[in-house]
Amino acid sequence: MAGTQPLNKKTIVKKRTKKFARHQADQFKRISRTSWRKPKGIDGRVRRRFKGALPMPSIGYGSNKKTRNVHPNGFKSVVVHNVGELEMLMMHNRTFAATIGHSVSTRGRQEIVNRAEQLAVRVTNAAAKLRAEEDA
Image (cartoon, rainbow, N blue to C red; front, side, top):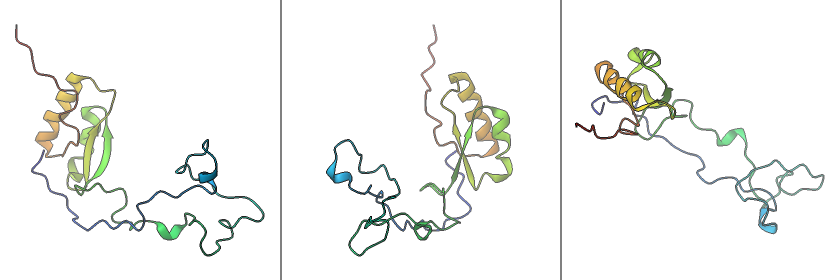
């Protein structure tokens, strides 16, 4: 349902959007740059946090608690597999949006979308796996 607006429209601020690079990943093709592992060496510059070395993930990079796991549309996401699970979002339709699970059939998706419209719950992937009805 496109009419439901989120309750909290706080601006989402990301302290860091780049992935943390793995130490010495530029020296080996087999090591992906984005597969972070904590350096464990006894003399490691990165582990000892020397100036000019790669930054390490730490708690200070964490997001604001109020905007953590919030999508750009202002809702938090909940995966739903049937109409019964959708009913839980009835009282929280301004905070959470439903995302229909991957394994749900076309008929099940249609039931969830229709019930979500009645409950005024936003469905993020409402148009997924829906095909035009063929009348013969």
